[in-house]
Length: 285
Ligand code: R5P
Image 1 (tube, protein in one colour):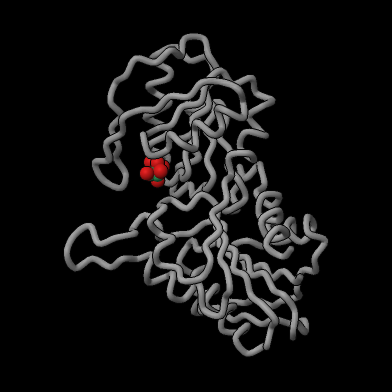
Image 2 (cartoon, rainbow, N blue to C red):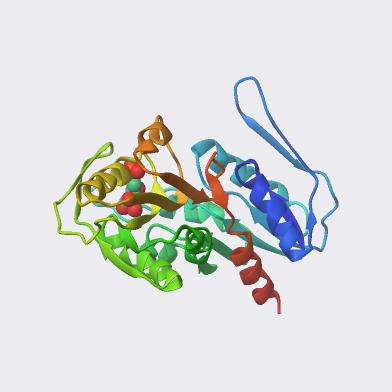
């Protein structure tokens, strides 16, 4: 098995190669002065089983992903499996209003080019899978997040909205503690409201677990609720840390913030290499 790591996922691809004792393929990536990308696969991978790893965020890494796909199309590999640790655009999985693009459908058509299977971690929408004709493998970051939280004596896990409850439950089960959720209303891309709710948080250490932290607004509002209810410690954990703008600064209201390495950030403290390696290994048998 040969692993190609794109710019968005080079660290994770290296960890994956380590886990699988597979070769990391030598590549070249550069940007022209106008920021257009150039990619080249340097090693000979003819007739190899290849795994391409590249998160689909931000947009420039999506273009780079398509360039890798195109380079691979000319190289007569034996098989190609595509790992998209963070699947951008999965929130727009249908036309909510007439005339809207179904963004994830547009990406799906290109992501699966030449691939036999695709793998992703905690895709925001289950509905995204319907646009992929190739086998879709959805992996969970819950064990990785719980692995870090287990040393922090967490008393309960909070989902910032009902949609995040299942993941929060999985993490809570692994920590052997309770879970709860908040009622969230999104006003616009930068503003969320969290309805007041009675929470048994007095003197407790709470982990807020979500799939994505983008602006940080959701976590900040949830943290305020927990502080009002007397929480002792608030840890924010997510699978995909986008941290746009000054999000990490705003998130200093939490005692700790961390995420996985589906995206590279200063707080990508846990890796999903193990769960991806396990899935890739299992599929080979
Ligand atoms: C939304 O449903 C997601 O699960 C996250 O809660 C959301 O993307 C977080 O966004 P932000 O950090 O901008 O509040």
